[in-house]
Amino acid sequence: MARTAVTVTTLTANTGVTEPAGTTADPTNDHVVAGIPAEELILRFANTNGSDRVATIKAGDSPPALEAGLGDLDITVPATTGVRWVGPLTSARFAQDNGDINIDLAASFAGTVTAYRIPRTA
Image 1 (cartoon, rainbow, N blue to C red):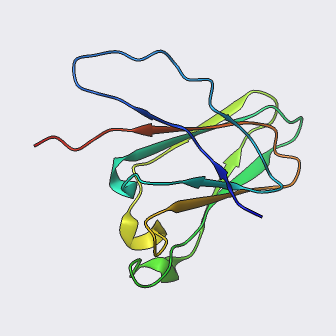
Image 2: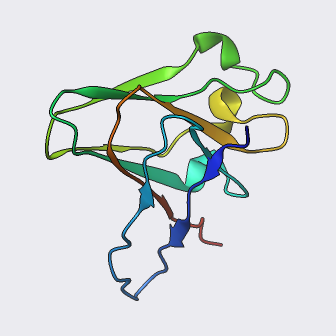
C-alpha cells in the first residue's frame, strides 16, 4: 500500500503563512514527505488520541543515508492535545534512496502530521 503524502508548507523570509490544517494521521498506510531535503524539514505531530502515541521517523537506505545504522527516531506525542515538533533532520540518517522521508505512526494514532520547509538561503 502506498504511503500517504504529507503536504509541505514552505516558509519564506519576511512573509507569513496561514497555519496549515496538516495531513490527517493515517496509521494504516503511514506517511511520506517527498521532494524536501531533510535539513530543510520541520515536522509537527499532533495527537488527539486519549493515550500517548509514537511517531517514528524511519532510518533511510544506505546509501545514501550513511548514518542509517543509528536507527529510527521515535517521538512520543502526549495524549489528547499533545504536540511535538521535530527537525531539522539529517539526510545522512533519514533519506530513502529516492530522497523521501518515511514516517510510521503507532496504531490508533489520531490527529495530524504537518510538514514545514525552511529553505536554505543563498
